[in-house]
Length: 92
Ligand code: SF4
Image (cartoon, rainbow, N blue to C red; front, side, top):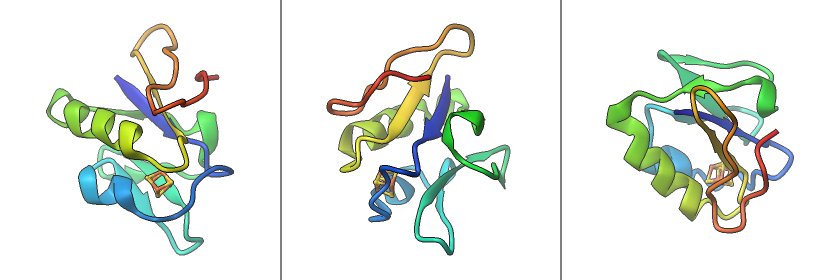
């Protein structure tokens, strides 16, 4: 599974980081970015697609469902998958 965040919609509340701190990180700009293998992916958006290990998948799904900005998008490792947030948009 892979995940990305649309920073244009992020409210910066940090809920995702509380739920899945290994995968989401709030930076100095007040927005959330994804972490891949311990490194924050620069740039953000759908170009910054982090791999999610199986141990973190449940937490990432929960974060996507709880995200008030509906801006956490999940994708299969292969084909793209629609956003699973409550009303999340389609993954690019
Ligand atoms: S939960 Fe959603 S809106 Fe809140 S910081 Fe994370 S990505 Fe942004």
